[in-house]
Amino acid sequence: MPNRSRVPNDPRRFLAERLKELDCLYSISKISEGKGLTLDGVIRRMIQVIPVAWQYPEVAGTRVVLEGKEYRTRRFVPGPWIQQCPIIVQGAPVGAVAVSYAEERPEREEGPFLHEERNLLNVIAQRLGEVIERKWSERRLAEYQAKLRSLAAELALSEERERRRIAQALHDRIGQVLALIHIRIGALLEASSDSRLVRELAAVRELVSESIAETRSLTYDLSPPILYELGFEAALDWLAEWIGQQYGVAVEIDGDGRPVPLSLQWRTTLFSAVRELLVNVAKHSGSTSARVRVRRNGGRIRVSVEDTGVGMDPAKRGKKAPEGFGLFSIRERLGSMGGEVAIASRRGKGTTVTLSVPAGERKTD
Image 1 (cartoon, rainbow, N blue to C red):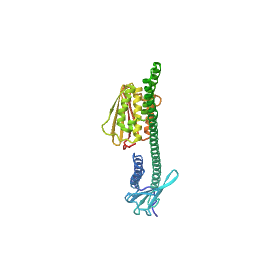
Image 2: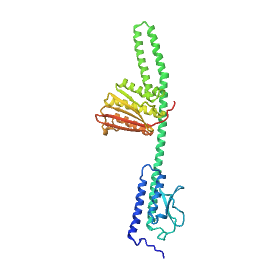
Image 3: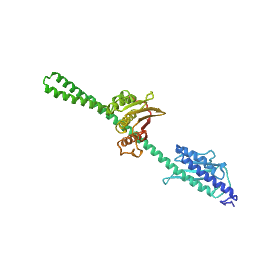
Image 4: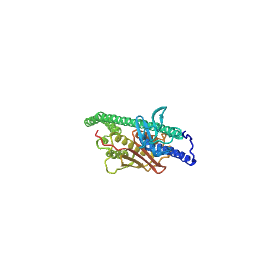
């Protein structure tokens, strides 16, 4: 009659077998917690550490079947000496994990397999189910985030096109009509000899001049033509000059001399963010100068806006302070499209905000 005793005669061998099982579970845990591994990579690594935990690893092999795809070690042989357990995810079977012996071995509790090996296989199947569920959730989340980024990019592009349309309408329609009115009033001034009428016309022409200036400023605020006509670098130079004129803050543009490859949506989004940051510097930092550094770093474009002002208290970087809300808005806008925002600030030592976005091919508009 076969010996079905679960405990070998040698206690040291029994202990060694149990230690192998613990080592197997520890290795599986380390693999499942590894960063950057796909589900495919996790399973391929796991099946390599399972056979050594069985009593006869020299003839043991492992197979995992998941949704019709098979992973197996070299020694796995489908045959009469096989131990199998279903993999369950959210209450439903999605596959199975199996251990086989390529050669016959003495019979134990479950064919040639130990009762402890059955328990171990059940635990391994449970761990695999947990890993698969987590990886599937991560994949769904990544797909959802990618879709959100795509929608955010489309929305930003649509908004910018609308801004350009409105800016073009202001320039072509209102701007030109105001310019014509300005010319006609000038002609009336030259033709009039009535001093009172001349004063009134001069006052009206001054109002029209202010309206022309405001319209031009609004046009550039909505969508600066230079951004599309000459590119991101030239637009930054114009922005530096505009900030100096509007707020008295000297802005230095520090580029590396290379073209900045940006897609249309990133070009407009990044320019808008830099403009908002420089306005924040002018209004809230107390600094009279700022620097904009533009660098290419691998496949990303990094733009840093630095000032030497009062800095920010880390505890007050939330939405409550005006500058905090601006930074929050920029972080949300860039983050939704796959960009990043980093802030370095010390009270009395100024602030540096770094924007990082994917580099992309220049597109004609």
